[in-house]
Length: 352
Image (cartoon, rainbow, N blue to C red; front, side, top):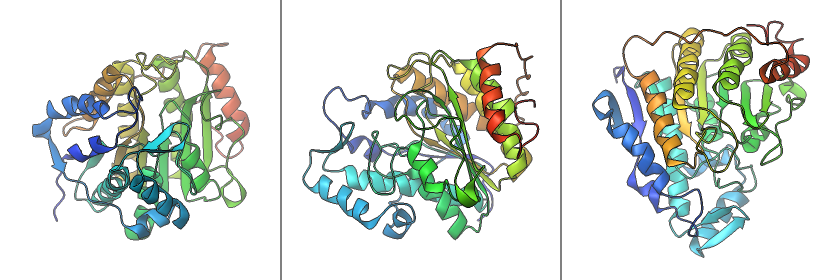
């Protein structure tokens, strides 16, 4: 199939059939906000339907007991798998659709059938561990897509950037011993789930291939953009990925009820521009965003709009400038702590 040269988007009404108790923040209405942003750009994107992930695709990341456990829980729904994570009667099928859409869209981008991708899926995935669900997440969509890229599209090195406000413990643990996957996370810390401190940098052969950027509450555009420019970009250049995946949560938005960050719509747009530029420079533009969290409808709509505008065909917008670093600032402190862990492997980290 010839390259479409358009942004490919996956969304589907069936993602709304995963339902929890009344008042739960991870609710079907989240996708209404995402849909509004997509619908306003419908003519500029290729809209694709999802397909369910196969058992083999799920089992590259998750244990057979976990796969059966989610299916069994849905069969006895309503049920909860941990204090935050629920299943309804359709949750197993919907979770397979979320993972399958992430795999399918990643493979389409890798094979040149789409230029970039955005997967508007739920439930989210980055907290899901190999053997259990947690944090609203059933299957780890991004981790499953990463392994599919490596095993089905012969992609060697994958960079996973997780900018959800919560640390993606499940994704980190999936790859922390694997030097072929660079996992980078910007997240509020200390905060749920309690992982993602500076010193968590991978283990064994994967030492150095995990890069955590824990940020204190109250950080906004300057800190997030500065982290991308001064930490993520140097790490990405040193790693030289062949594909980039973004665990794309919008819960660092200023309106979000579950976190204490202050990212604006303009901030997300600038972040997406920087990520697109990194993908263009390092891996031929091969880039996929997969929806994770985001619990303010305003943040979801604004964030989705920002990402799509950065990905749409045409000349990319000028990159935001790298601002001068203010000594003693929150950003300066974070850069110094990340550099203390990683500068032996990435000499210019924190200084780009």
